[in-house]
Length: 305
Ligand SMILES: C[S@@+](CC[C@H](N)C(=O)[O-])C[C@H]1O[C@@H](n2cnc3c(N)ncnc32)[C@H](O)[C@@H]1O
Image (cartoon, rainbow, N blue to C red; front, side):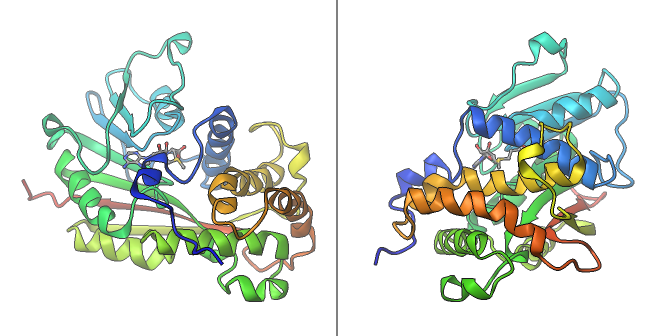
């Protein structure tokens, strides 16, 4: 049996998810779901932007969070949207937006001239991009580029909140076709040294990096057994879009999951089809049924360099 590890360091540069048209659309739909599920908020409670502030969106993907926030902010607020790859950047020229600068850079080595510049730094859905050890360095970089009193925002989906019982026990899970994919994904992520028990690990790392005033919001994005096929990029009802979002996250992981040799492409596709329907029969908890998401904010101490 092949081990569930990534083949080489070079493969790491490839990143676990694709960068293509499907992924772009997936990220845009996901943005609409995250924003609506978290009460139409783009910023954590208590975080406000003022004239002339600078905002950093690191690992920005399409840049859709910056684009949406720029539309709600004073024109003089400047946005830096950066990512390791420019492949998914949206073209903002037709939108008439001129206060967002897109660039390529890594969270592990942000430009020196950004030191102490930003009021808000957001990193969203990057837990499967870098290892836990790299997060230590990443948080130091984010701390460096924030101005004293500036805000860090992290938004993450918690895949461990759905199924954590390994490949041998999938039949006992609420949605076995999804549990199989989830179990393989968890092995890949853990073997690569990336975060899996998200809430505990992330909180510990942020504290260790010296951030204070940490606020944590956790929410199950309930699907209520919605219809993924009925979804239409952000215009469908929230539950259908949420289910589509969940199915699409797994769909995007195809190369990585089938690359382990633990499941064929054909079975992967069958599981994707089956998982959407499977959620209809999952018993509802008080919080609803679906995956848990986390939105946390923390502050760079006011009296720091
Ligand atoms: C799942 S996407 C999330 C995109 C965006 N934050 C969003 O919420 O729509 C993760 C992004 O992190 C980027 N990424 C991976 N490693 C990175 C690194 N070391 N530094 C900066 N970005 C990175 C990927 O290229 C990808 O665009």
